[in-house]
Image (cartoon, rainbow, N blue to C red):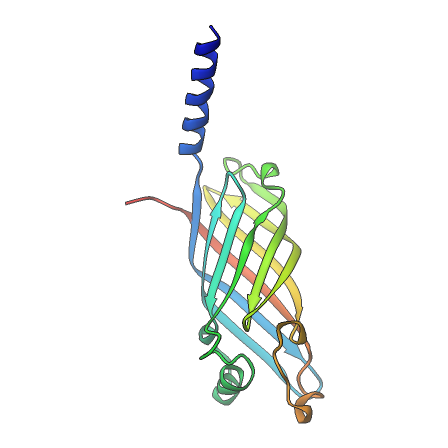
Length: 185
C-alpha cells in the first residue's frame, strides 16, 4: 500500500510539472522618463522580451538598449553613445520572480497585485529590486505591468557636470508586457 501511495505521489508530481505553463512576451513596452525644468528625456522601447513561469513565478525580462526611441534623433544618439554606452552594454535585463505567484489564478480573469523581487542589470551594474506590479488575466491572455524609479548613479551612468542641472538622476521606468501561452513546437 505504501508503494502505491509513493508511486501515485510521484506520478502526480510529474504530471503537475508537465502542466506548468510558461508565458512569453516578444514585444513588450518599456518607457523611461526623466524630467527637469530644462530637459525631458522620454524614450520608448517596444521590443522587450520576457518569459514568465506560472508555476514557479520565475520571471526574466530583457531588452536591447538601442531599442529605445526618442522624439529627437540627437537625444537618442547622446543616450546611446554618451550615457548608456550601448555599444559596450547592449542589453538590460531583470532576472527574478513573482514572490506571491500562488495568489495568481491564471485560469480566472481578474487583476492580481504582485510582488516582484530579483536583480536588475543596466549599464553593466546589477542591483537588487523589490517592486510591486500587477498581472491582469483576461480571456487566457496575461498582461504584466510594473513601475519603478532608478538612480542613474546606482548604475554608474555618468552625467557630465555641465548637464547635471538638465538631467535628473532619478529615472522612471514603466513596463507593459503582454504575454501569450508558450507553445513548444
